[in-house]
Picture 1 (cartoon, rainbow, N blue to C red):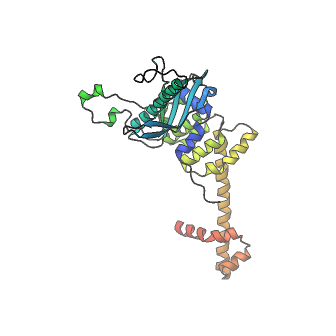
Picture 2: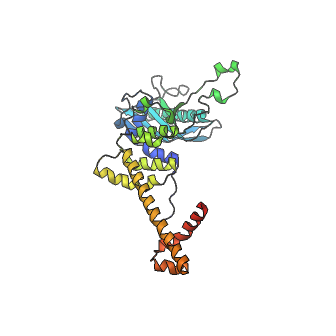
Picture 3: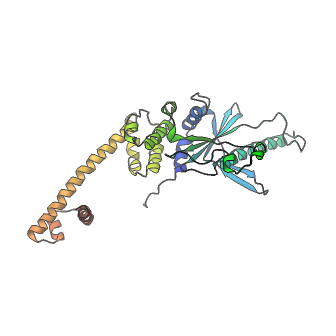
Amino acid sequence: MGKQKKSSPDKVEKLLEDYGDVFADIFNVLIYQGENVVQPNNLVDGPTASVYKAAEGNLGQKDRDVVKMDVRNNVTYALYGLENQTAINYVMPVRSMGYDYASYEKCIREMKAQNQAEEHEPQFAQEIWPEQKIYPAVTLVLYFGTTPWTGPTTLHEMMHLPEKLKPYVPDYKINLVQVAFLEEEMIAKFQSDFRIVAEFFRAKRLGNEKKIMYNNNKTWDHIGELMEFFHTFTSDKRYRDFKQFMIDESQKGEVKMCSLLDAFEKEGMEKGMEKGLEQGRYQSLEKLMKKTGMSISEAMDALDFSEEERSSYKQWQSENKTAT
């Protein structure tokens, strides 16, 4: 089996945010101040790709990271979209505006198609009936960086805009959420695994991951997705190595962040003991060769070295020479 590639941040975030409980929780806390307005049962996966007509007349496409429709009694109440950013993007207002425009354009096309199917079309110039209303599209830009966002948050900030033109150039503001800078009170409102994510980034920004994360008492619901998430954002392969361990632990009972940290600490102690034993074995080898004049191969045979010990000796020798 080949070397596993590290997942891209967008793909990992998408796996976690695609769960209805996580998606609804994000919007309930960040938009509705913790009220349970968005219900997971009402969410329907929306098209991440929206087709629109570009200025040149050609068809274009806008791809969102995650999008869901809030459908109540067969009526679309709102469209919610998430855009994940791990770095500052200096065209984000135009990107976000493009996503929303594509959603509105799609809504209008659907209205026209419905009118045509029902043979109830308005005059050509009207396009749709006055009582037909489009649903709102709300896009949140989740920024996971640990340094403040310095990019533009409005369309006007992207322009050299003369004062006299300002009233005639509609502005557009992105709904930017700097996850690592959320206040503790806000993070505490999250009920889903996104609380663990938010606390993780806050701890990462403050540089005291272990202290903050040890106090995280939130039970993990989506264990595999969280482990993949942490693996991607820390480049620490232990998160992937311990993924199955955490899944197995969940079969015994609740899994929390302290379960993982304890496993990491135990692994560190075991590795320390293994390293100490390895050090002693190689030191004994060198003493035997020096005392008897044996070759490396003869001394290894005498001490019953395994193939792994034999192949690792040169690396150990190199590291110890460097250290000395």
